[in-house]
Image (cartoon, rainbow, N blue to C red; front, side):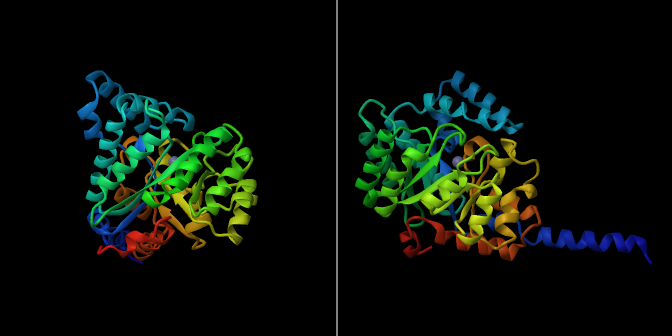
Length: 337
Ligand SMILES: [Zn+2]
């Protein structure tokens, strides 16, 4: 037995697979981004153009901290800093348009951009109208942006009602769904169920961050009561939630880099959604969560998933194509991409 050859053959097989798909090739694929928070996604160059030197220095410092890995809750304060930089409706709109161009450069053809409603002096409805102007200005023949309005588990019923009312009112103008995000162990989502069900009955998509913390105790109740159209992250799903999902295969939005950087997982191939979803051939999409904060493009996320070796290049492309059908607005598929 030629030991040297014995060692070399597996190495050659691995390197052949690895070289069969490059980041450049992934960049050319038509991709959809289904999990992206506006506050964590403004292009850094855009922020640099409006921030003070001091704000920018602080931002770089915080980004560096996250790059080195932080605990889940520690990742949230950076959103406040970004909020102090993007502090007028006009800046939000310009940032949204800059984000659209940045996504399009990565060959993203459709994106659902999520954000909570704010009152920046002229009321929440005016803020939403400004966002929708950004969506309109950001749309091109090749790229379709849409909005999801975010609530948190601790949002009040009144907030939820206002958000759902506005989402329904502006449904035809670019609002396609409601997202439940924020720290997943803070607050009680149950009082919000009627409003979320009302949004769903009106034809809006519902996606809930689920399995971001092993301490969530409402997963099965959320799944059974809301039957959301998609779930975000799906890292720490309880056994009963996993069993329920086997029967009701709700698509997951997998954000590998995010899960790594906030220490939900230690290695990309340890992401539990790979075994619950990828290996069971259940539907999921590849997403960035917060591309600014995690310094990642959607193409990078696909390349990272590919590098785990869990799925091959053909399967990765299949996941990319299939995720288009998980979009809340299917109209972009009529465009000449
Ligand atoms: Zn998220």
